[in-house]
Length: 118
Length: 232
Image (cartoon, rainbow over all chains, first blue to last red; front, side):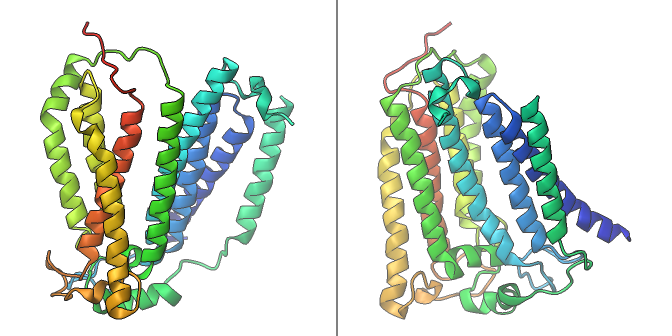
């Protein structure tokens, strides 16, 4: 593998690692705020994976200056712009609901939140 | 213990699934499909040299309207929950450093945010990042002040008007060109100039105002109305 390919695949590996770390955190952590943190970590990984999917080594950002000849794919970047904003909104809602649940059960530990059991 | 082991097994299974679908056929070298169409015709179609902005605001403007709706419902839910169930607890008074920063910096941060919003069709930026920067200036003011700033009541008005402006700009395109959010209802100008790209800068302004007021509203709702911080 040449340096370009190593950079290219390490981006994908970082994104996959972030997603997997986030999923692991959501599954194993007990504090609801840590679960929210792990959730945003997975979110970031998904965004990075999407941007990576449109990335072409050696090309510049999709801003068509007269000096620019070839650009990367603008579509995934536009989608990720949407995804980041939605992620922030969902994270804000997650934290507020989490704080409410923690206040109701007297602890941020999800094992003590009896309403979550079925 | 069982929980961690199960978590590990699930994550490893997911990792195997992810690595099995990644095509290891080398580095991508050409654009395909929609991406190559945008790269070839984006500037001619919309007049915006930033292709990401032209996708977000013009080609996929309807998706952006949906995104604004999602952001609106999430921020409304946060504000609603916090107004029904106040978080309580006594906020601590801001330190000298925060107070001094909150007096000096917000003007410059707001100006930078407006710059990002208005240059969305020329450089990386646009309504969403610029609006978030403006909201961060509001957050700094909120952190440095002892009570809710008086302007907080205007946030709802700005938010509603910006949403209305976005919708009206979209339907202007339907009325003139038969296409929602067509950027060509205003003359395109010469690409690369500040006044160019049809209605894209106007839509960016509407999105920026909406995002800034929504995020500011979320920040403001963390501090209950009429609550003041006792001086040290």
